[in-house]
Image 1 (cartoon, rainbow, N blue to C red):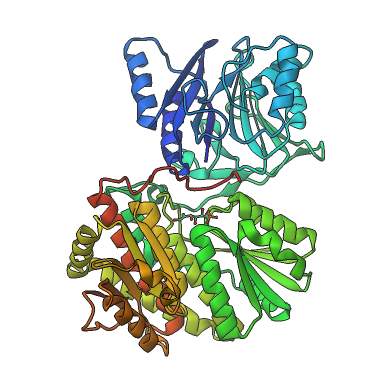
Image 2 (cartoon, protein in one colour; image 1 turned 90 degrees about the vertical axis):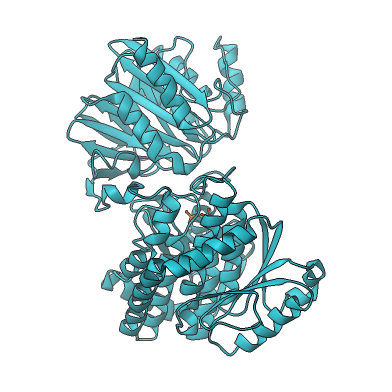
Length: 598
Ligand code: F6R
């Protein structure tokens, strides 16, 4: 979704804003813009397309001496919701007098009525966005108020979920607020930052203040700031957190794409997932034992982790367990009461559907445990207990390492409930070592590259798996759809023959996930059913099967752990197919890393 970066301080503002936007690229964007204030002059530049287009324009202006270094800046990467992708609709938006500039993430739901009111008062609008009402409303209140008071009055009139940063050219003040959309503050040695996410300024500072909904930050100069909560009306002294993410972790380094870097980090991510705070883990175990049942919610890949959780809690713990995509949760809520437990899974901790599901559960006094990757994210702040999955920054739009970290934490919980935490941890560490070896194995990599070449021209792919391999098949389909633009459908092994087998033609590729379990035989029967109708069968499992057209062997592990080893080749396959097709694997079309709008 949209990305925000703002800075006031002594360093090269233009560079900071551009670098910040580049770090936020993973959130998805279709246009970008910035506004720099320098010695009472403003430079406003907006461009559609890549952030590099914005950078090019900035460089052109700098070369022609049409732009100088500044002291204050705000930048924005837009993922369009209201209004087409045009330069006019790109942020920052501004007031009639071009003194107030605003960047915004989220949706102003009551923008139409505000716009009518402002037009009546003589304000002129130039864009089709909901955002533009904000600078005009601030301008209106500014007539009789200070900038801070005008912002406060404006923010209180906005309905919807948003993060906003406003800049006043006259005073050089920056004001930011959030309500449901992410905004964090960075405290640097030479200036202050506001951004949608920590990586935007992590190369400058790891000292971070997490803002809560209703918090309004007033940046007075490069050192001084005030935070007031607009709901309680109180000024707050908020804790400065030290983030232990390595800045290299948020960079591509020697890798051509974040996706391959993050896939290679999977072994480390699994190991780090076992680094859980013992006290919190024990509290979660107690809650699970005490609960009448557990319900999982998540979206996309995180949803597949939840489905895996449902299989594991039900089959290994004998626990009554449910799962729904977070956006569908309200249909299941009536069947839950406060004796139940909700487990919410989210890499970003900012997915709006997941946050809403959690809020609804909390209204019914249902306890919430969340599994999250991003420290200080909204989900970590509204849950009763948080287990960090510790995958480290994940910037490729496609979730890879975070999926395995989520599976690992779920397994660790299951083994802890069984009183076998050490066993769970040992198994995970062993898998981490085995996957490390696998990723180093040149033969394995070239086998996947060869398959990628073959599958890159496919129009349709089917994938099946039974039991724990069913969530894996679903995740396989998602990775190939989003990363390679190939229609891929997943089915539980037994389901294809109930209709979809009609679509199998000569050469249709079918990926069959296998693991050592009592279901293996049945999956093999399903594979042969497909093959005898002409399908090209690709197997992924611990033991090479002779009748398959292509087989990728993975380490043999206990059944419940098989989703970890069975999905790893798919991540690589999706990456290499994307390269074959000339798709940027880090930023597939139409997608955003964190989906903060409905
Ligand atoms: C798929 C993918 C998405 C996310 C989903 C939830 O590769 O990345 O399906 O899994 O948008 O995001 P989080 O986990 O941040 O809640």
